Length: 239
Image 1 (cartoon, one colour):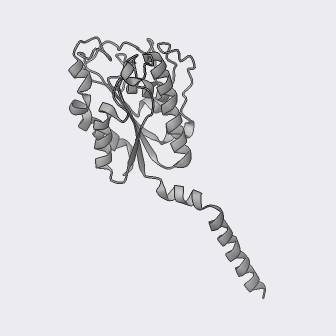
Image 2 (cartoon, rainbow, N blue to C red; image 1 turned 180 degrees about the vertical axis):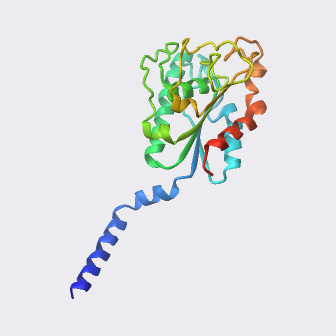
Image 3 (cartoon, rainbow, N blue to C red; image 1 turned 45 degrees about the vertical axis):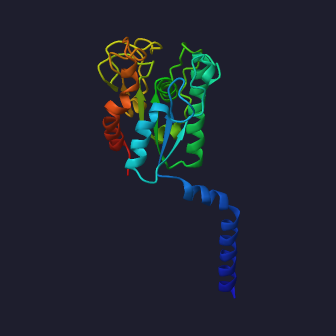
């Protein structure tokens, strides 16, 4: 009789556990192995913008992976994007990407994360991933707004045409030897754990991340460096 009672109690306990957490179970089952965040450039319509080139390369390379576009103004004062100033937009975007990453990591703590930011999208990604503040847009806090748990799960971060670019950082790729229009201060260093996960692409002819005058260069990083960025990402992800 004692054995029957123990078995019955165990069965009831298991049934209660299953009944108590269907949402949690569904969330665990629906979490992808890899999730990508894409942040678009100024005035690009809602979605990934030019960051979509690399986002799609990742999705195609890893079937079953998922992605989301960062919801922020991506504006520089133009009526087409709501009239928000560049500073207002980038400040909101920095908060938006940190919030999106933290929220996803809370739901899916084991999912590997990748960030792809293009132009203003690169600036907000840089701000959120490395911290350090951004006086160009009124961001005074120097803390990294992404949680420690989420930072650990971010396996790669790709910045393309980032206005925060400065020469000499170990993760830089391209021909620019100067700086963007919203540069990091001299001597800046992204925390080492994050820096090892970054590639930042900028060429000398780019008028936004460097001191050039060729708009086409600024828009061309996905085509020129996309496969190179994907190869780097593959070294960081566990398939």
